[in-house]
Length: 74
Image (cartoon, rainbow, N blue to C red; front, top):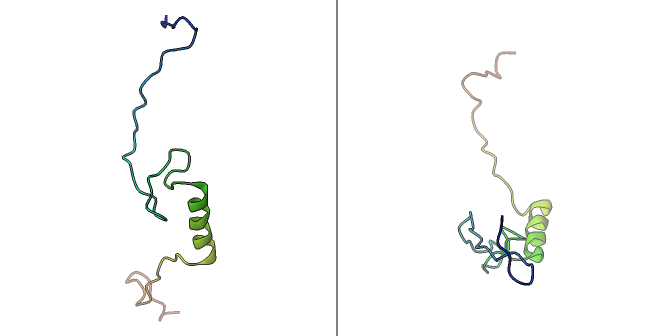
């Protein structure tokens, strides 16, 4: 049985965070649990816009074909 206070509310418990605190990658402020890894919905939408507009891109390496695949022999 859990022990309740006189006003029938459960006692407060301590929340243990599993993630270490981090700074928002957009503005550098402390992050919030609701918008993690950002500090606000605004910063999350800025980041999404950067991905969708192509500002973030994974560079492709142009070079030789892999050794197990020969494009010359067809």
